[in-house]
Image (cartoon, rainbow, N blue to C red; front, side, top):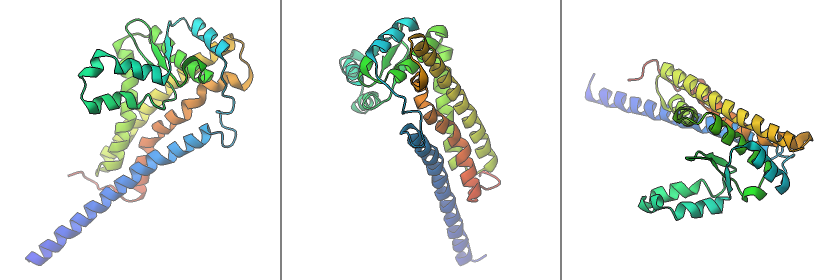
Amino acid sequence: MNRFEKLSAFLEGAKGEESKRGRGVTAYAGATAIPTAGAFAYMKGIGGGIRKPSFTDAGVAERILADSGTGAKVLTNAQFRNKVRNSFEYSLQPEFMQNMLLRKFRKNLGVTMPGADNATIVIPRGMRGHTGVLAHELGHAQQLKKYKTPGMIGYRQATGAAAGIGTMVAAFSKDEDRAKKGAIAGTLGGIGLVGQEVGASARGARLLGKAGVKGMRRWSPYIGIPTYAALALAPALAYLIKRSLGGYSKTDK
């Protein structure tokens, strides 16, 4: 093979690698965008989505907080951000870390954080916010109180991370076997996360039922489940999309 042929072969190989990387990007984008768009449409109420029975009731909110037995503290996004800003730990962080700490508490739907004694729940408008979301987060607070171990908290973090990492492995690995294993591991992690979320929603629905809430409003704690289902689907979708585009080789060199 002369120099020209070697150069042509090298450029052809580089072109092929670039094409495979492009297919990986396409697979990752499709795997995350398609289910997320579906979940967003569902939560917006297209086709009778579960968001329609959402409601706000301060009396019910106070009742379910007391009945939950968690002793949880409920804060608005703004209250929690101010609390973080005024903390000693925050002052020690570099600016980019400070921004990361606060970013999730600008428009989050709801989050429950474990504490030394009781959980802290952060939702928009606090106790005057979406009562179904509060019920769901109280379900998480009950989970934390019942299974208050580092292992339980670590499991929750690991299942979400597994789904995200599995999607990236499925989308950007060259080797099909490795991508398939990543997709399976990510999907199993996503299913574990969905299980935790459904469990919290079921606990929240029971709290609402005990507080006298009836009809479709009782099911409002399940409002966020489609987003977690989307996360669980993403690894398998990434693998299937990239395989259909011919983006894998037999070996990953």
